[in-house]
Length: 214
View 1: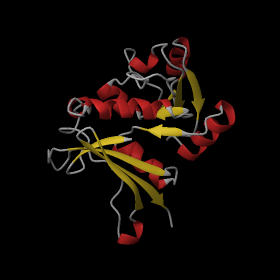
View 2 (view 1 turned 60 degrees about the vertical axis):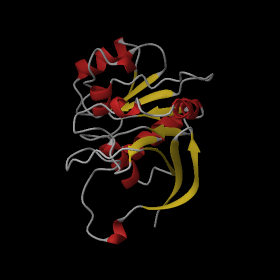
View 3 (view 1 turned 120 degrees about the vertical axis):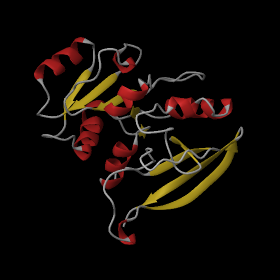
């Protein structure tokens, strides 16, 4: 589930925290976000989002268990003050074979589970297999930035997209949008969606789509 502006942006500008825009979500929508988190086995964001937002990724405002936090971080170099390193929810950091062993040792000293998924870059398909096989994770919610969202779609690992629409336009040629990644060459490469539900939650429009892969 992601919150986006009317022009499809995730933040005010490159490098800005998404929490700035999230302040303007209706209280009922904020509750919906946390209720949705509680319905999933795990929640995933990229390491760059952690560096910028320093998210907790826990369930608050509603009753329910916090999902397992999954953070892809190739080098395992999360900042020491990251809130996901607190012991308030189970956390898995996915590193690669190129990660510094000292980083891995430090993460483990903070009570974090570390898994290796890939050589230089995180292999998201392999990561999903590890999460299912070794941790029993069958459902995962992605609150990622444009890069993580792109790789998850590119690897056909997204079944559904849920969007919280914020009534703002922020513009900016390099302002992060919902999906980044490489430019496509033709309409055949577009990710096709099918709208299955839309509704107002408080004052915010929420849309839900199924992803249709060729």
